Image (cartoon, rainbow, N blue to C red; front, side, top):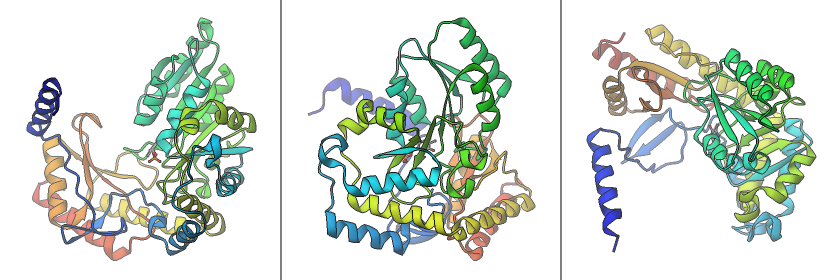
Length: 396
Ligand SMILES: *Cc1c(COP(=O)(O)O)cnc(C)c1O
C-alpha cells in the first residue's frame, strides 16, 4: 500500500494539473510512426514525429536489425566497460567519427544519456558553464549533475554571451569554462549562431559543447549543424542522437580521441548502464551508410519543409523564426492554441499544441514536423485543415 503522504502528494498534484488542463494524456499508436498513423482505429496525417527521414520504418534498417538480432541476440549482455562492447559498437563508432569528421566517437543508450554523461565527466567544482536559456531539458539536467557554476545567457544573444564569458574569465574564479548550446532549438527551429559562439569561445578559452539532436541527419549534408558551418575542428563536443533522423535509438559524443578515452573511464551512463543492443546498432550502421551515400531523403525532407512552410505562410500564418524542418505555426493565447490543436485532431491531423510554460505566454503554437516520406497529398490535407480551422476561429 502506498504511504499516506505519497497518495496525498499524487492526488493533489494530479487533480491540480487536470483542473488547469495541463495533464497530458498519451495516445498510443496502433501503427508504425510513419507519415500516416492510426489511433483508436482512425487515421491521421502525422506531423509530430522526429522521424525526419522516414528511417524508423525503412526496410533496409529493419532487415539489418533482424539479421543482427539473429546473429548476436537481443541484448548486449553487460555494460560497455565489462564485456558488453561488441565489434558492432566499434564499427558504428568508427563510421560515425568518419561521418562527423572527428577523431573519435562514443555511443550511449540515448541522446539524453549523452548529456548525463559528458558534461559531468569534465566539469566540476571551480568551473563554470555558460548555457543558452532555451537549451534542452537534458542539458539542464546534465549541468545539474556537476558542481560547476551555471550561468544562463539570453537565447542566441551573442552580446550577452560575450559579456558573460568576459566577466567569468576575468573574475579569475573559474579554471575551466564551457559554453553549451543546442545546435537546432527544438521549439522554434532556429539554428545556434555557431560561428560567433566559436569566435567568442576562442577569445576567452571556452570549451565548446553543441547538442545537435535536431541537426543530425538534417543539416550539413546530414552530419549536423557544426559541419553546416564548417566548424568541425573548432568544436570540442558534438552530441548527436540516433533516435531522431537516424530512426533508431541511442546517442553519441563526437570529439577528440583523448576526450573519448576519458569518457570511457569517467562517464557514468557508459560505466553503469547496459550497452545498446545489437539490432539497434546494426540499424544505425545501415542508416549512416544511407546518409553518406545518398542525399535523396534529405532533399525530399527540405522540399516538404518548404512546401509546408510556404503553404502556412500563404494562408496568413506565421512560422516564427524557424530555419529548419521544425515548423511552429503561431496561434496565440493558450486556450485558442489548445482549441486549434483539438480541431486539427478532429480533422485528422496529428500535431501538438505547445503553450506556456514551455514557450512564452501568448506565443502558443502548433508544432509541425514534416518528414521526407510525407506525400504532397498528405501535406495538402494538413494545409486544408489549417485553412478550415483558421477561418472558423477568425485567425486568418
Ligand atoms: C531530443 C533531444 C535529446 C534527447 O535525445 P534522445 O536520443 O531522444 O534521448 C537531447 N538533446 C536535445 C537537444 C534534443 O532535442
